[in-house]
Image (cartoon, rainbow, N blue to C red; front, side, top):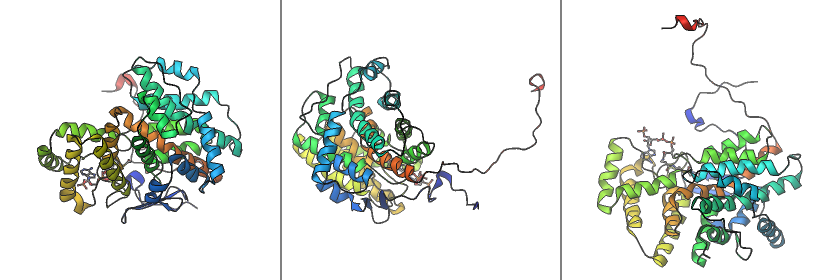
Length: 380
Ligand code: ACO
């Protein structure tokens, strides 16, 4: 039986799936992965452990985690065909476009197998989690005219990525903070890119196509692209004194202030609170700069002016600041989000396959009927 529902633009408030992967309480500012509070995971877990938890539903034992980490380490390298393909990309191209293309290209190399084969699922998970950071770093090196840096087996997941990107082993604090950033961005219920991944997954296409689809969706400025926009905005504001006039101008002209507001959270995003703390630690170690001062003032003024409407800092507000302080170029912020969110996308892919039904919503037609076809020579 088909139930006719009220049309809600953006599907706001409409459940698109049943899921046991993550939970958000937007009024209390709570986020849980498989029932575990994000604050606990940020404090005690690693990104790879969290990835395992999201995808297989339980925290791994010590042996299971070691096996998973070893598999990831083994599969970090990418084929030279992918590197050569990237050499043909324009160096001015956006790294998210390069990542989307490369993620889809992985499907050319790894044959499709039965989607109900747990070994195939694991292999696809390992390959995607392992290779996406390598592809992001490789494109970055290639566009600067350098050869990609090979993964370093002595480094863990987060430290290795920063090494491949900067050619330097990161400090312990930077690697730890980056790992926490990955954990914080790994999953967030039914957001746009996850929905996109699920729609693609529901057609039973290969997992590389699923991830390429999600990467394309994440790239937009209202979703993953917002952390990049936050930095452009801080540059535009330019000084602490300009913060208040900037906010007032945005409110008057109904212009969005990047890094604020959320469809679900009506209080401060718990991930923004954790990231703010990490940003403080990093800035204390590496020295404060004006961007940080502008950001702190901006949050204060936005809260004062828009807090009563439930508009507070979201996860993207502080992540850009942290990445910039680590020396990561602004246009790589969204690919970093993708490196992390691949865990959530794959968890939803796997869950979708358990009880798959192809997504085929309906629409409310607002066009004409019985329109007469006018031959081209008679059209005005
Ligand atoms: N700055 C100023 N006003 C805002 C902001 C903001 N950042 N966010 C929402 N509002 C206002 C809107 O202007 C609108 O006002 P109106 O009712 O007077 O027209 C009202 O709040 C509702 O805004 P919507 O855009 O309809 O809310 P929605 O739930 O659709 O959007 C979104 C949520 C897209 C995140 C929005 O808050 C936004 O665009 N924020 C800036 C971009 C951003 O930071 N995105 C990252 C989101 S987190 C993530 O994807 C990981």
